[in-house]
Length: 191
Image (cartoon, rainbow, N blue to C red; front, side, top):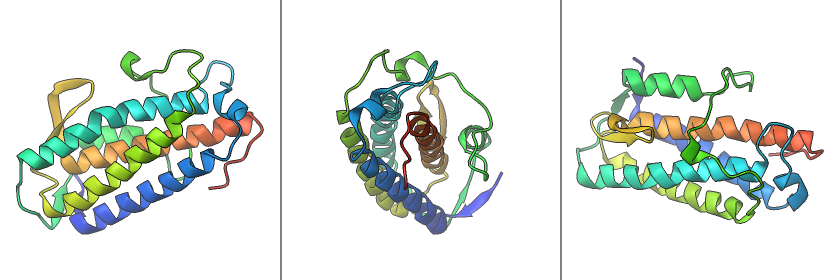
């Protein structure tokens, strides 16, 4: 399994979240029709954000709780776990900006047809700000020894570093989907 310098890993994750905040902020300038129109058989931008918000609603409190309960001192290195690394690799978009494998979302992370609450954008941005704070706080803990239960089964836990990597890869994957959805709807997301 790969080993990372903890500080460099957190730096790169913070940079990715900052870029995601910029892209989400740009969504606030796009007309509601483009945000709420779902291409045939796919999700609208707002439905995608609902999906991302549902993951933030699960993971951010669990990350915070895990760090609060387990104040294992900082370690300069993070070693990915087998299960966590598998989930990260399955979620991560390719270097060419494509999504390798389609996945079916769990039902509790899917917006209802016709969901069009544009408040989902500001909710997502607020979640990203919270994620940045958690990454800042993670600079004081051991990313390998602290674990977080995954959303599909609380019996399975992955390392804190893998949890951050997974959550952020998941967002990157769906922001590619957002760009493609907007393109289909005649809008270019320039961020």
